[in-house]
Amino acid sequence: MANYWFNVVTHQVEEGPQSDWTQLIGPYETREEAEKALEKVRERNEAWDAGEED
Image 1: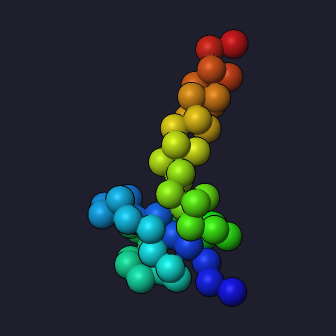
Image 2 (image 1 turned 135 degrees about the vertical axis):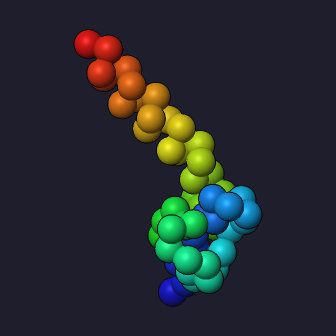
């Protein structure tokens, strides 16, 4: 079973880790999940920031 990774430098999805781990977010089970990696990171950061305001 292949894992998918999102490369934060190239903004491309990789099937299996092909780049240095410092450039990757993942692993994800599907290509679609990996494609939405930055969106997930943004959502988590916003939730974290909102929690700090309390």
